[in-house]
Image 1: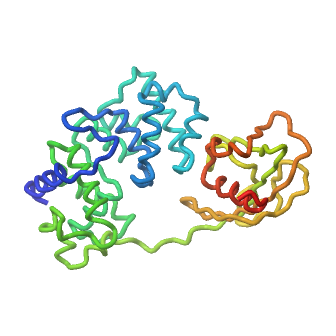
Image 2: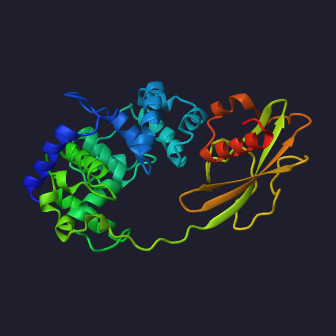
Length: 343
């Protein structure tokens, strides 16, 4: 891509950039805290899903010091439903590390990479957008734009380093933060996975994939592997309109989150394995949920407890939405309500 093409993209961005709540407006400078918060939230998630979470977090914890002082359980509960919960744990750890160092985020990729939860993409995005450093910012949208601009013939994921090098070759020294955001916006709004809007794209004239006649075929992708299937059991134990919850271990799937008691998740699992108490368990159906690396089918068992167990978390059923349950357990709670005739 030529310098003129970079200028064309930046001119387009000035007029057509998305109005996102974490972006600086007018002449104001970007807030590194808000840039960091948004980038962590946006990992493997859509802007539409992130927007309400970002606004809630920024309102509740407006500074890195405020977030650093928050209880991890509160942050995890506020994060519930956004997925990839290790990000929330790293969010707290990173905020505390920055606050302990004086409250200012470092402005270089190398120093940002030392912080919890910050990888190559996130470090580049923060350095570029928040501090104006020249950095190569490649997310899924930029990956798609670059693969089409150069008609990259190598399929993903193997092509990622080549695409990174190509992105490096077109990243300007000036206005690199705007350039990074313009590339992301272009991929999100015009250079979309299907039916790209080439007719109004500012880079259409230099796009190799468009010249070939089939830009939607890029990026090329290797054949998908079958996602492993796992099974398990979950337990709804109720007493006096309160349901038994447990806090999951800090490490592992849904770590640190509140949820229903469960048995192990494995390729094969015995029904009723891992029940939290002896009770007249009744099967209430099952729900399916897809994680990044496997798909889970989990059977739900319901029972009434004659008394509350000591040192356990008993949550009022009518206030269950306040518990910040991950999506999997929200599905199970809905299934229990349907089975019991509450829904």
